[in-house]
Image (cartoon, rainbow, N blue to C red; front, top):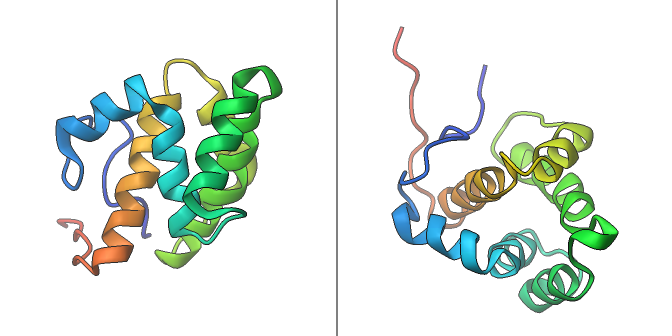
Length: 121
C-alpha cells in the first residue's frame, strides 16, 4: 500500500535535508506557505505563510491548513490521508514540525517528478 515517501521522523531525509528541518523549526509558516503554494491553496505561498503567521496556533490555523492540504498531497501521490489525522499530527507539539516537513518533502517529490521509493519485500 503506497504511503509517504519519507518517514515522519526522517528529519534529514532528502529532498530538503537538515536545512528543511531548521527552516521548519525557525519559520514554520514558510514551510506551510510552500505546501499551500504547491497545492494551489488560497493565496499561494503568501496565503499559506501569512495566514499561519498572523493567526498562528492560537486559532489552530496550521492544523486546519494541514488538514486541508495533506490529504490533497496524499491523493496526488496515490494514497489517502484523512484530514483528521493531518490535524492531529499538526496539533501535537511532538510531531507538528516533522509532519510539515514530511508533507513538504512529498510536494517536492511531486514537483520535481523524482521517482518514488519502492518497498523491499
